[in-house]
Length: 98
Image 1 (cartoon, rainbow, N blue to C red):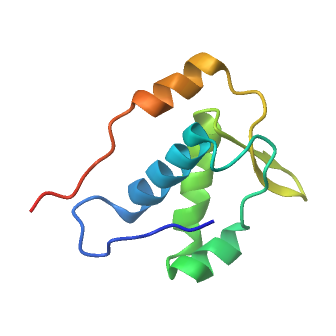
Image 2: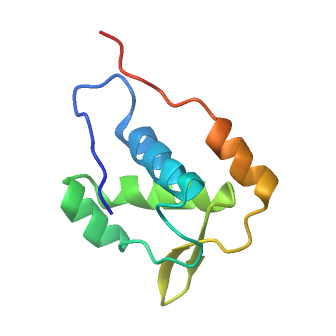
Image 3: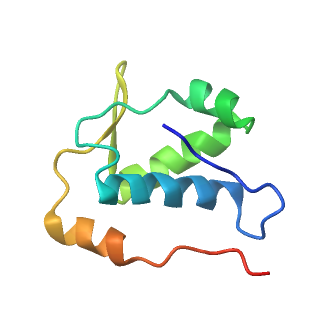
């Protein structure tokens, strides 16, 4: 999974990560049932605090995009409705202005 963070952006890092993962889920780049990197692994890859990744995963779980399975990891939910998927596709992304 490739994520890009713009450190100097006005958009918070957690929002950048959450929006990229949500977009990947909506576009099919991340398929239902696919396992995401662990909190520790993704934090190390992106050079961010583990709590940032945990908050992102929890937020996306709350939105119904991801599910955390105790002892197994975090997965793209296979129960997402087509309506919710369409809503995430239609959601505007924060873009950098310059």
